Image (cartoon, rainbow, N blue to C red; front, side, top):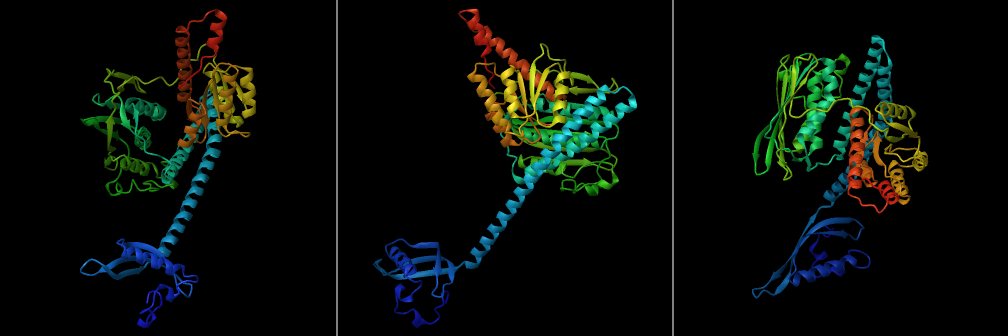
Length: 529
């Protein structure tokens, strides 16, 4: 009946060839071979086969065949079971097609957001940089306040853009789970530097308590941990008008290199009503609608926090009440690195905004501003966006560097041939060629011509993990996302200082035959990371 043969006489006394399954007898031959294999002791179990009936209709079936044997174990015949799965295969095909369409739509969305992020982040970084310069030059308090408002508004817009980009990356699966070594105290210090301007602007007391039992070097996912803490601390500052924000890091379990860290973020802010606490981790859910104009955001921050914690096999809980402040408690399992060395920790009190309340830190935090670099290090900025180029040039110049500029890759190569730059700041999206290619060409030309090797870093509006790896493969030693800020300038200064120390060390251990050869050798010292 499955194949349209309803009467016994349609089958009894006939073989596969007589049934004429398909012109040429191809299906009959397949059946005959399968029957023979079954009789020879190779039964078929749930094998998928396609049948083409005399009327041309195709059926997809699951076939099982077993031999029928006599008492001596000799095969007498075959019993077969056929299950029609044609409808299921059709559904499977439709689901596969729908998934492909959904993947294509998701990829298109991700590409759109990537392009939008680049097109928005680049001018935004220019606005922020120029506004910072304007704020420094203006003298009248009301004028400076306008410039500061411009900076803060631009930063809010940039933060919102970053949230959307991060959420899109996470949905697209472009954010891998890392299992690498990291220093948690350094990670926390970096977060403090990022939020310090907001804390000072709102005149909040800011406290950090760091448990000395936490190993110095951990193995885990520092990218997600940083985003979790930054989101929670950022929310605490945003929703606290006055009072304090506190971060506590506690080692609650440490055994056989397995470590569980408890992160607490406490604030004295507006709190969360009990009946709303179940909603705060829902994406796009906001306790305060945008039209009220009180707190900016898309309702994505805590959604990402929850997803990141789940991916790290962690836990999160909230304890809050309306107008009673909020406490978020996060438990994250990590591992202790074999490289972990328990070095003495220093405790330092950093004065807060009123010079009376104090912030307790495990380590001293680097100053926000850094003194100008000595000896006028030369830097080449390769950037096609004129406003961003001017902003970067001005910031680096004020930090004590001699700065040259190039609008595209060709100009950059020309400049490198004319000057021995200590460092090159490279945009990736140049109008004539990719920044990674330009970096490779610079590195190749300097090596071939025995010229000093420049440190090359990327400064781009779009930097995902793939772009980061491409930059490293091209010989760059660092990647920065626009805009350039004080902390990034500090890192640039540190890179140059480290490179100088490496060169001195190599020169100290070299044994030149004569001065000319020594000078030639020292000029060819390369930078390797």
